[in-house]
Structure formats: C-alpha cells, structure tokens
Amino acid sequence: MPKVWISLGSNQKRETALKGAIAALQHHYGRLQISNVYESTAQGFVGAAFYNLIVGCTVEQPLSSVLNTLQTIENSLGRDRSADKFGPRTLDLDLLTWDDQVITQDKIILPRADILQYAFVLRPLAELAGSEVHPVSGQTYQELWQNFDKTSQYLKPV
Image (cartoon, rainbow, N blue to C red):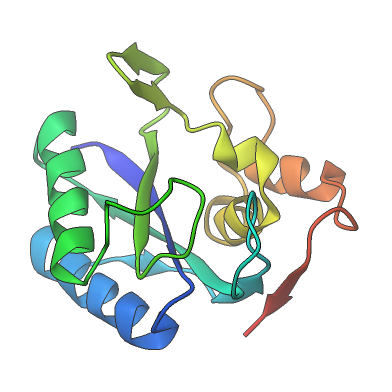
C-alpha cells in the first residue's frame, strides 16, 4: 500500500473546513499522521491568510481514485471551482507524494513542485517526514527545510 502525503489549506472558514477535511480523510483512509497547523499569507493573489497542514496515510486505492476522493472531499466542504485558480478557497487538498515514486502522467506530476516552493508545504512535511528523501532532489525533507529561505514567506505556527 502506498504511503502518501497530502497538503491541506483553507482561507475561508479555515477551522471548520480543515476539521471537516481531516474527518473525511480519516473516514476514507483510516489512521492519519497530522502535522501542526501553520498560518501563511496567500501566494499568487491578495487575500486572507491561510491555515495549512500536512497529513500522511497509506492508501489501498489506485492514484486516480485517491485524486477523485480528494476532489470529492473538497466539493463536499464547499470548494467553489468557478473561482480563479489563485484565489480564496474554502479547501484545497493536494496530493504531494506517492511513496517515493516520480510520476508524470496526464496532468499529474508527483512529487508535487509545491514541496520545494512553499514554506507552508515544506515545513509541516519536514515535521512529519523529516528523514524521508525527496525522490527528485535526493535530500531529506529536513535538509530541504534547513536550506529553505525562511525569510521569503510568512509562516507561523497556529
């Protein structure tokens, strides 16, 4: 069974949306590893601050089913898909990794580039999976976080 890491973010009804997402993920996948929650500024647009966290779990379904489940959870918790890609959102669930595999098929690219770009993804991932190795960079998530420019993006524990 593949181990996956999923990024959760919300800047509308943040606590309600994230609690609902965690409950839904537990319902679908059972036991979760859950990081601390971090507040970050919106990236790519002007908007309210986000709450972000990472969850890890093992899955029995194929990749396409997991992606469909994540989208279903987003929709059930009020995700408005008519809005701009970079804009406020009730809930954003992004699959970050699929075991230690590098996957490029259709529009799916794993590990997700966000890991290396955003503090709100890398810090909680390093917290939970610090000794795991990023399958492209060859560095552990802890090493990546240690080398990340922490002054470039606002991030604080909630």
